[in-house]
Image (cartoon, rainbow over the protein chains, first blue to last red):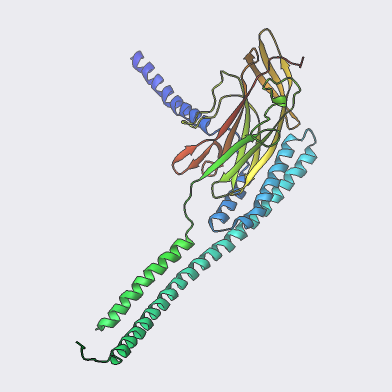
Length: 162
Length: 207
């Protein structure tokens, strides 16, 4: 009876410890500091703007702002003492990231509209081109037929000269 | 219903429509390409030479080593990269390329930056050993200065001061897991980029 109880206790302890050890080994692969959630969401918005079709030139300003925020954040971390200065820097980080988020959201809308318009225009141009090519085919056939008829009527019959 | 010529015309139009719409699809759809990063270290003159002062890999306390570290983003999107600087001796494992595992060497510092697609971020990496201990037959680095910032080194020792290494690892921000990961994901693969430069420190001052 006692043995069974010990066995159960060991099983429960192992059941608790095994997932914990698994978590530790996986966190060794993807470790360390988490970015502030604000950075993460601003970065995700920039990615969304890019996926929507924002160009390199358009995202350049956002990357500049992100780097500025990163630099300010690092300065705030390194700043010895002075809580007031740190708070000022962090407020600047917050403001900069706010600008990134606003601009990235605007860019995403603009870029997705532009991408959609470009796509629609490309398909419409494709249809028009197909129609024009068909027209050209018809016209060419018509001209060719007229030419052949003309040539036929221009034919002369000569007797064979031996 | 349709005459033969109209039927032929319809066939021609539909064929041309398919061809031109395929062209429209190809031109509006971005092509998949290989995603990768490049990581490099250049010497004092931004060349693949002059890695050590006087071209002598035996560094002394206070010798300023001038390198230039760069990363190029060819991932097709903006990326947040981190270059982690680690200091190791001969016995510490280097990063594992196959398992995509970073080196267990102590982290000295790291540099973060958002970079655009096709952009190269290059930064000066000037470092020197500012404090080292030399007990019998070994060298222990205690303090290191990188770009004018001093960092404590958690007691790294090498026999006779030989075969110290500066390891540079490239980490990237993984949006799905919201963590920094060693290397980057390319499709289903995990790829890594790291460098190491060896140096010795057999005496604390030049003769």
